[in-house]
Every structure is written in C-alpha cells, then in structure tokens.
Image (cartoon, rainbow, N blue to C red):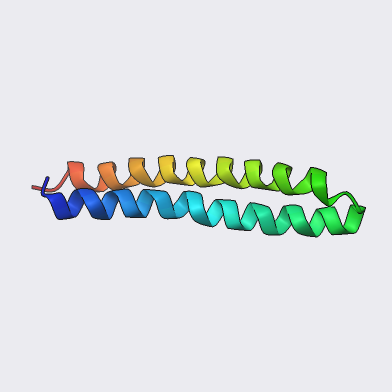
Length: 72
C-alpha cells in the first residue's frame, strides 16, 4: 500500500470519530438545555457520539475490505 493510500485511509477513519463527537455534543447540549442540566448531558452526548463514530469507522473498514477482496 502506498503512502498516499495510508494517509487517505487514516483521514477517512478519523473523520467518522470527529463527526460523531460533534453530533454527540450537539445532542447533549440540546438535552442539557431542555433538562436544565447541561453539565451532565454534554459529556454523555460526547461519549455517545464517540461510540457511534468508532462503530461507524469499524463498519466502514469492514466494507472497504470486503469490496477489494474479490477484485484483482
């Protein structure tokens, strides 16, 4: 695998985590404002977003490997 492919794959993987964190913070902030307990819900939203980001990263890694196995 060339150096460019390694960099592209790493960038793609980290973007899922970043997007998940941003979405989690946004949801945590919204729930925190609604419940008037923002200090509790921001970290909860962040951790849930990180979990989703890592889950989607793992899922996309498996899909990429499956697509290239049958090709020559």
